[in-house]
Amino acid sequence: MALAVLRRLAGLALTLLAVAGAIFLTLDVLPGDPASVMLGTAAREDTLAALRAELGLDRPAWLRFAAWIGGLLVGDLGQSVTYAMPVRELIGERLAVTVPLALLALAIAIALAVPLGVWAAARQGRLADGAIGLFAQIGVALPNFWIGLLLILVFATGLGWLPAGGFPGWRADPRPALFSLVLPAFALALPQAAVLTRVVRSAVLDVAGQDFVRTARAKGLTGRRALWSHVVPNALVPVATIVGLQLSFLVAGAVLVENVFNLPGLGRLAALALAQRDLVVIRNVILLLAALVIGVNALVELAYLVIDPRLRRRA
Image (cartoon, rainbow, N blue to C red):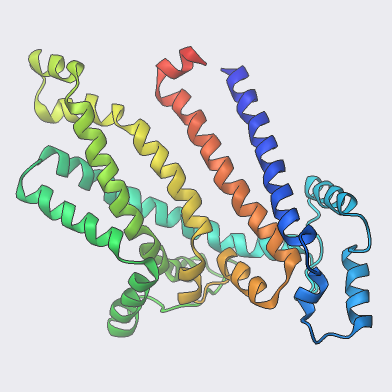
């Protein structure tokens, strides 16, 4: 078990290093002047020279890459040219919005998808199964930013129950901050809940047809007891895979929703940095999102070892 964890951690570190190399190669090494990209083609030559010196572009590429990786190891992400402040502080402020938003959206998606998927599998071929399948089809087809606009029209503009956008911060009172995340969390969660509902239904039906379930029923176990005691726990492995992927997607894919609801999150920071051509911020945000996706996948693999004893024996 410990050896399997160490192998996965080593693979995670090597993958992150390769991703960092690809990001650095794309933004800093390929033909083109990063200073000209950031300041525009109309910038004066002395201004460009000053920015090149500030960013260290007059040094060899391998030295710049080593300096970036060394800074990452000690928590120094560099200085934003646009905001004139450390990138670490910028990202930390935005993560205080994006991470709670993603976790709330994931909780909503799981709370909707698991009972709906199990119910659809238990009512296979009936009206409830068809209705839940229709919900899943609609949820997959609708983009989350359109759902966000619809939620604003109904629950903010029409009913006035929740704020339409903005974020008051966590310091004074967390309740207004939490209320401001409800609508964007639902906008993020509904498409993911539709996907997860399909996965739960398929996993439950697959496990329900196996021999040990039929044996449990033959011993006198009721259908409901067999479903929740044997079928659902054994259907969690494929569901855990999708949940892990969805968590990383909810963080990395919140750009549109954060812009719709005017939330100062990581996705909005990436969009503004791209519009302002702040390559220092873009480089670190992309690496952070990639690290999140890779790290969540690694955690899902480790969760397999906890859920499935057969995998623990193989490890």
